[in-house]
Image 1 (tube, rainbow, N blue to C red):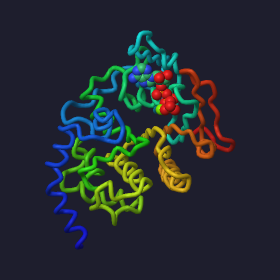
Image 2 (image 1 turned 180 degrees about the vertical axis):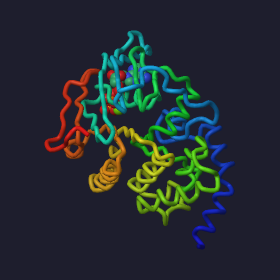
Image 3 (image 1 turned 45 degrees about the vertical axis):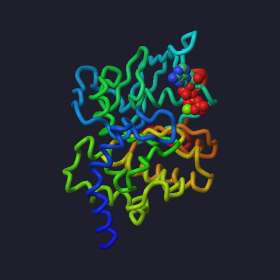
Amino acid sequence: MTMFGIWMFGGKKRTGAAAGAVAAGDSVATGSGAAATSAIAGAAAGSTTAAGNGAADRPLIHFDSVVKVYDTGEVPFTALKGVDLRVEPGEFVGLIGKSGSGKTTLINMLTGIDHPTSGEIWVDGTPVHSLGENALAIWRGKTIGVVFQFFQLLPTLTVAENVMLPMDFCNVYKPEERVDVAMALLEQIEMADQADKLPAALSGGQQQRVAIARALANDPPIIAADEPTGNLDSKTADVVFSSFEELVARGKTIVMVTHDGDLAARVTRALHVADGEIIEDRRREGAEAP
Ligand SMILES: Nc1ncnc2c1ncn2[C@@H]1O[C@H](COP(=O)(O)OP(=O)(O)OP(=O)(O)O)[C@@H](O)[C@H]1O
Ligand SMILES: [Mg+2]
């Protein structure tokens, strides 16, 4: 009860702190703070674009000839060379491949953090390639939970406040319900007793578990994770990976970039990315296509 009381006190300050943090583009651990904040929180305005034509009979995730050319530098660089991909609900997909092969670029296409140069990306019936920024942010906040290598928790918000951020932005739950939803998510990852702490007071593994809880805030069907264990020791990485396995067992679909060969062997489907292409698509033995 005491802890809850303290948390509520923190909660009172939350709205202002959250708004300030986002408005100020509060610094996060990597350079892409703005994109990360948007990815985590969604935006306050706009509405999700209707699926429109073409959604029928598509898999949960459908990349159709996706090309990404980066224009920075003297010579344009083609990071994705016409990627085709279909992912069904309940798959646990690992993206593996050398540094610079295009894994992050591919994940950023899936989450709408970045736009394709050509091709189509359909996710859960939505043409992600054709959404504007506001619609994208709202859509993402409800459809894809994003987990980053460096956690990207907002440092001035408590653990519980971080988990509530996507709820605040996407308005999925009534304000008075959000505390309970956040605490239930934190309980699932055994972090409820840390709810009042600031991220800096947590270990890397604990921060990443909080980031996973935040990714689940609006109960999205899909989790996208870019090297979520890349900054963790192998034991902690295993704990975090196990959380993902539990989510898949509960029906979530996960697309995860990993450098870790041991973990890559445990996903149900491994996609090998090289030079902007998927050169191998392998289902683990015994893992049926859902
Ligand atoms: N914003 C950008 N501007 C120009 N080139 C970029 C940009 N982002 C990525 N690239 C280039 O696109 C290629 C693919 O990059 P990407 O980040 O997708 O690789 P990755 O497989 O995630 O690598 P890593 O394992 O090191 O994270 C690389 O050659 C990279 O230099
Ligand atoms: Mg990368």
